[in-house]
Amino acid sequence: FNTYCITNFGALAEPLVRATFGNSPAFVVAGDWTYPSRNSASIAFETTLPCKGRVEWGTTTAYGNTTALPDRFYYLHLHYLTGLTPGVTYHYRLVAVDESGVTVTSADRTITTLAMASAIAIPGGAYSAPYVANTADATYILTGDITAQRRGISVEANNITIDLNGYTISYDNGAPVNSLGIDDPAQLSSAGINYFRWNADTQGTLARFLNGTITQGSQNSPSGSVHGHGLNPIGVYYGKVEVAGITAIYTGADINGISSYWGIMHVHHNIVQDNGTTITNRSQGIKAIFANNTGTVVTEGIHHNLIRRARHQAIMIEPRSPNLAPICYNETYTDSLATNSYAMGPA
Image (cartoon, rainbow, N blue to C red):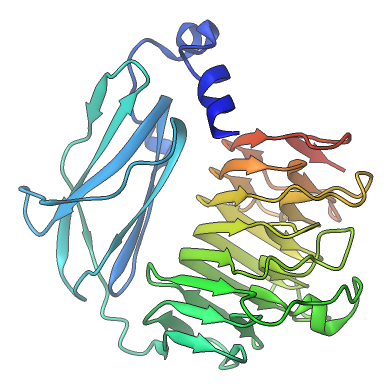
C-alpha cells in the first residue's frame, strides 16, 4: 500500500496539487500544535505540499538531534522529542522536503519541558494486569514502555490525563482473546487505553490521552464485534475525551483505531495506521477514527489527523447532537478492502 500511495498520490502524480497549493512547500501556521511533557514533547505541523518532515532539536541553536523521517510524503506531521530533562528550554526547528527535493526550514522555536511534580508515575515494564488510573482530577505520566498481556491502562475516574511521555504501550501480547461480543465487559476492556464511564456526564467528564504510541501486540486478536469495538488502541465507552499526539497502530480483525462507543470526542493531531485486512461485516464498517458524537462546541471535533492507512473507513461519526463540531484538515488514505468504504462519512 505504501508503494501504491507513493506511485499514485502526491504533487508529482497529480498536477492539480501544485496548481492549487503552489510549486514550493511552506508551513501552515494553523496546523501547528505542541505539547511539552516532563521528558518529552509532541511537535505537530502541517505543510502545503506532501513532504517528508523532521524536527531538529537541542539545548542550543546548534540543535544536534533530529527525529526520524516518515515512510512517505505527507501534509500532516507528528514527531516526538524524547529523553528530555524536566524544566529545560529546548530549541527546535521544522524541516520538510517535498517530492522534488525542495527543502523548507522554519525559524528557530523553543519549548520548555515541565516539572509535573504532582503527576502520578506509571512505571514501565511487563503487565499481566492493566494499570488502573482511578484518582480523579489527576495527571498520570508514563515513565517507561509498557508491554501488556491484554489491556495497558484502565481509566476509572473522572478528569484524568494520561500522558504517555513519548513512550509506547504495546497491548494484546498475552493469551488470544476469544470473540465475546459487543457488550461483554472483558472484550470491551481489552485495549491500549480503556475509558469506560457508563452513565457519566458527557459534558462534564473529561479524560485526556496524549503524547505517545499505542500499538497492538503479537497476538493481533480480533475485536469480537463486527462494529469494531474491543481491542482498540484507544477504546472509549462514554464520557468526554480528548486524544492528541497519539500514534495508534493495530492489525487484528474487525478493529477500530481511536474508537468511541458513546460520548464526545475531540481527536486531533494524531497518526493512525491500520495494518489489518479482515472486515467481517462491510455494512457496519471498520473505522480508523470513530465517534458517536464529535462534540457540541467549535473548539472540539476531529481535525489534523493523519490516517496513513485504513482498511475500510477512515473517519466515521454517528452524531447524537444537532450542534456538531468541525471535521476538517484531516489527511486520509483508504485501502478499500470492501464495499461501503469511505474516507469520511457522517452517518
